[in-house]
Length: 308
Image 1 (spheres, rainbow, N blue to C red):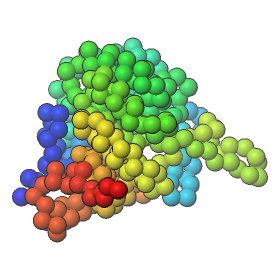
Image 2: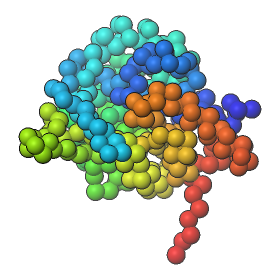
Image 3: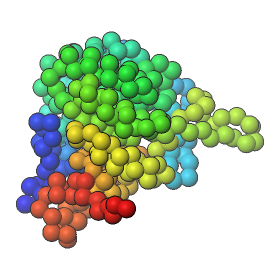
């Protein structure tokens, strides 16, 4: 009965439960095999995959902050060739939904990765990263313009039949405008939010703490912002919304679900507790039983709001 309560079917994919490990915090899945059976997850999103290898930004590129973490990794990854030739054969057997995070500097970069990976059955969906704040080209440059975002999604949509999830940046004036643009471009879902651009200064040296100067803020500090944006986007688009941003407990995840998220992604919290996704899964199930909910879908968008 637990499996039926927790299961979600979205854009043609059945998820065992609504909890997914977020990109950039879970490697390529195999890194967490020593901690637990990753097949218990609803799914996971791989590290970003770009056409060519990326070394990322120079160190230091991670700084702890009050209630969060600032990172400027810069999409470090071994590239498409290594992913298809070495990594995917090792993780393709995992009994969970594998979503590949796709990044690039040009539209053609995204098209190349999605076109190549479209033929691999183990890859169930793409999460198109148009929201990374730590690269000089691409990333957030696509995610802050409705026209650019829509153009990119249309280009990707033309080369793959797999579900396309677009990861949105919070570093915009109105995130619902971007969400609507990617929906019109052919996105099957949106995921939000990515990190909020921030900066930390060493006051003794009067220098930025990060070599990149700025980085992306994640963790509990951004959760209220993320929940608000998920609520707004879920009321704007007709495609599923995946919520993330500072989830450190089942109650945190439930906030996103009640606000309108059909799935949630757990990220930064796994640096504190690697097994956090399992705790969140069990906590959501306990909540469903306690409140007499037959399934997760009963909670999605169930926020009670008094209209004035």
